[in-house]
Length: 215
Ligand code: B16
Ligand code: MG
Image 1 (cartoon, rainbow, N blue to C red):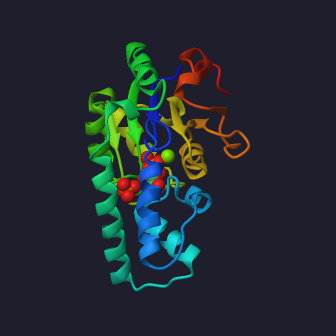
Image 2: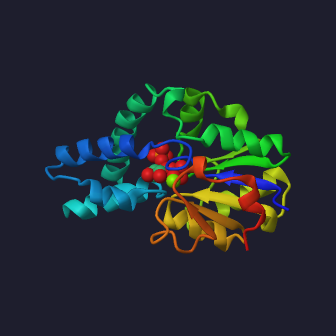
């Protein structure tokens, strides 16, 4: 009795983390320090401003709020230059097919992302129409692990949380889903996403039948 599936964007539908990483690395270099791929893991699912704070922390740098606004804007300029070059070929394996199979089965679909650039990305991938509701960083005030983004998705779809399954690659996202009273399918490593009800490596590895037997 699953009635809605809510999908995170970065790490589930597409791998924008590589572009976020390049932009943060460039920003860090300008500030005189290196930003590693290992540290980049900490930014997944985290808002832009909080990401900047983590980056600055990694470099041991302090900035005023006004300077932070400017740095975040600079990073976003570089990031948007990259995502504007994206094509549908970058959709992760099985993602489009799985979301479509939900729709074909009468299950509602929503996007639940922290990104304020979600619409640009969905347009570039040509998959705006795959989602009945799109909730992103522009519509929420509380970041994951707060459940706001997913609860708003459920509300827009008019489906109660217990009938929703969230697909997430970030620990904070899985926590948000559980805090909202939803089922969570982790995309990635089961040792990291241990709070999820089930973990798979990608949307190409999950079936609707499996969703029906989630606890
Ligand atoms: P933006 P998701 C998140 O996307 C990313 O994982 C995270 O790294 C990023 O900082 C955040 O979006 C905000 O993105 O700067 O575009 O507003 O995983 O929630 O889809
Ligand atoms: Mg994500």
